[in-house]
Image (cartoon, rainbow, N blue to C red; front, side, top):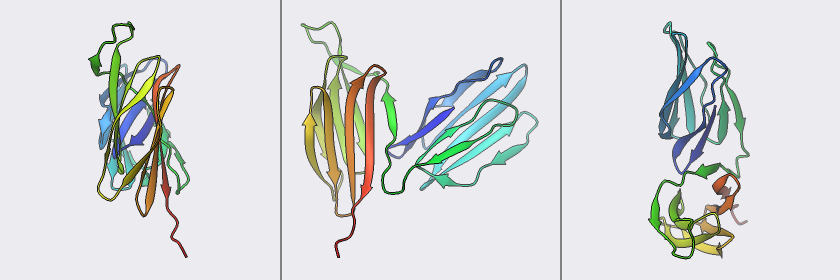
Length: 199
């Protein structure tokens, strides 16, 4: 399974069971995400919790035994096969740049263009520096609005129609948000960079 972090929340991107097992995601987005794998009466549950800047993982088997991983950096992708003992592999991104990538589910519909059968949708992408809202179809991605967090300014590098690029910057950090349409759907990439102190 694949777990990611975006805008202060955890996301379950994928929970694919091994042959013979079934997967059920109980909570897919939030500070805590959870689910279970089952097979012939056997149950293995998992829970990932975002605790400050660390992710804590709890895996419980049917007989009640439990194992908890050591705290990991929040910039990680965790993969665990649904076996009776789950193996966890953690990849830590560089400390100066975090680039979580997610496929944004097109769940909200706003308007319909009369000259295009593809309905126009909107999606909000949140960062600690601010929020942007884009409208999109499979033909274009356009920037609709930008809302900054206190202490941040923003700069628009590209407002569409091929992709949207917005930077949020304070005295200490910089967030670059890139949103574009791909064969896999709408992709939002957020890069985090700490500003170096001037000598």
